[in-house]
Length: 466
Ligand SMILES: Cc1cc2nc3c(=O)[nH]c(=O)nc-3n(C[C@H](O)[C@H](O)[C@H](O)COP(=O)(O)OP(=O)(O)OC[C@H]3O[C@@H](n4cnc5c(N)ncnc54)[C@H](O)[C@@H]3O)c2cc1C
Image (cartoon, rainbow, N blue to C red; front, side, top):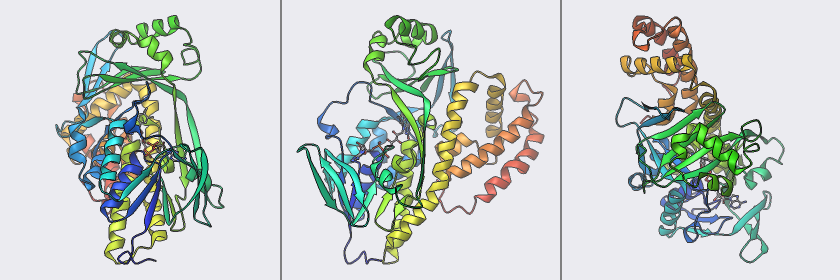
């Protein structure tokens, strides 16, 4: 135990990505000195390589964490609100599906790089945070409390001592690699057999305030709006198979494929084939590990602790929520006059792990849903009935999507509520062809039977509600 009044520890954060940078800001705000070690060069001084721009949908959880350091409004000023999904059929027909009947509930398209740069700049401006670029961490001696690093600018190995270190070094975390060599630590990683590639639409008349989706069964294109009017598209395809990154290996094959499947989008990207071959193909990993800490010295947060696939738009939101929970536990400990870091780290992992596992599983479910079910009549009917229930039973019927995206209720609650909603919808949809004719009296009984007990179980949740 340490008296935080006497002296605050210097915290070493590994990885100045989104989570590391926001965390450094929060710690600086609480009076800690922070040293951040970042493998890459300073992204504020070099152009982002083509095809690696990535737009993020930032939603309630992310905004709550940003608000804690007074940055939510600033981020929203650079964001494009997306009020719903715009579905593009093969024949070009458009269907708009709002995310919510409540006009205040939408998601925000933000450039990942712009957000990262903003957070780094704000962190440095506190005078409490120093970022060491081109400093790669390769290993960690937990007993000696020393990091083995490589200074890429000088081409030399260095060892750095630490008091407390937090690994926010992303899905391929070296800190996690070192931790899981210790007895009692577990890690499980899996890679989707689908990859993704970015394509950019520079000019278009696409609806700006929407997330555009071209669902095509085994593959899919999405497009998120940028502040300058362009759109960043992501093409998801299997790595192998009859239509895959492997099979689309010639200019003709790619052109024919894009023209046949995504004709309206293809018409907006004159150099789509060229972009396809120039831009890298990304992969998508799920990582689950536990515990996330070593004694009171080392902690993992963000993708380093729980990388998830991007199909719920929650990876960064979830990492930011780690920071909100950390902040609340740290402030409680500080209020007591001392910080037991080991207990704080253990409590944090225990609170977050089931929730991060839940969003991880829901993200994979969403991938399967988007890939296999969006054209399925039964699935679309259930979604339409869900909208009717949200309208008719406000407060009583809560969908999984809205709990994940527009609240900071525990992800595990959203997962359990989602399972209950499926049971309700499954029963209401039998023999139904028009969602507006759903039996509302029976719906009320089913909501009371299936959904209410789940919601009640979480009423005592420690997480404050928005
Ligand atoms: C295609 C795609 C779409 C996505 N869409 C969304 C979305 O809509 N909404 C959302 O919330 N999330 C989304 N995500 C997820 C989101 O990008 C991640 O969850 C988020 O970036 C994780 O932040 P992080 O700081 O934990 O890790 P990262 O952003 O990966 O940052 C890790 C940092 O650590 C550095 N680093 C790595 N190794 C070392 C080392 N050994 N030594 C020193 N430094 C190191 C890296 O250079 C990097 O700067 C998406 C991801 C992808 C791939």
